[in-house]
Image 1 (cartoon, rainbow, N blue to C red):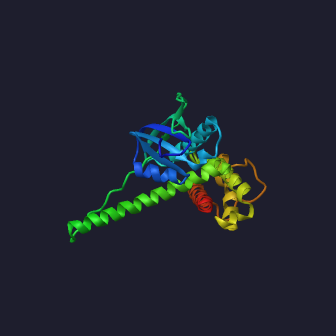
Image 2: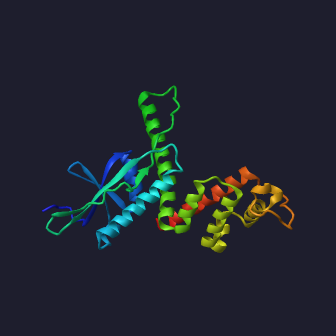
Amino acid sequence: MREFLMRWLVEISDVVADKRFLSDLLEKLNVTLYVEDNKTYLISKRFELLSTSSEVLRLTKQICTVVSEVSNDFPDARINLKLGDLYEQREDGSRCQHVFRSSSTPVITLSIQSGRVTPVRGISEEAKAKLRAERLEHEYQGKLALVSHRIISAFHNEHALKVHRLLQQELTPIQMHRIYELMRNELGEKLNDVASKKNWDRFTHSVNHPGVFGDESRHMVSNKEPPAKPMYLEEAQNFISKAVNLWFHQIADRLG
C-alpha cells in the first residue's frame, strides 16, 4: 500500500520552469508539487474537499488559467507546463485514472530570470559569491512576492481578475476608468486607503474631460471646467497602476 494518502493527483507534463519558483508560487495557492516515480503531480487540500473528478479538474483549470493570464504581465519570465490526467487514489493505494487531455488544456507561461550582477572589486572570491547569492535571493523573493500577490488576488477576487485583464490591454482613459469603477465597487469608502480622495478626483475628472484627453476622453462633452491640475496620460497610467498594485497587495496580505 502506498504511504501517500491524498485522494486526488493531477499530473503535469512538459514542465519548463525554475522548479523552486514554480513550487513556491503554487504553494501561495495551497497547491503542492508532488514527485513520484519520475512523474510530477499537483496535490492540494483544496482538491481533497471536492467530491468528483470534474470538480477537481475545474478547480485545477481555474488555477492554471489565472496563473497564465497574470503571467502575461511579466515578459521577463517563462514557465511552461501542461495538465495531464487526473488520478483518484483509493484507500487500498490503487489509483483510478481519469483521462482529460485535450487541445484546450491550459498552458501556464511564467518565468523567472535573474538580473545582471555588477562585479565588486577588492574583496575575496568567496565574499563576491556570497554577495551575488544574496542579491539573487533578494531578486527572487521580490519577483515571487510581486507575482504571487497578483495571482492570489486574481484567483480569489472576481473584480481583481477583471482588472488584471484590463491591465493587459492599452491603458486608455476609458479602460483606466473601468479599472477605477471595479475598484470603487469592491472597496467603497476604502478606495481612499489606496490613494487620496484628492488624487482620485483629479484622476476621474481628467479621464472624463475632453479638455484633457480630447476624443479619447470618457465623455465627449462636459459642462464642467477641466481640472486645475490635470492628470495627463502618463501620470494617469502610473497613478492607476500604483493604486491597483497596492490593492492587489492588500487582498493577498488579507488572504495570507
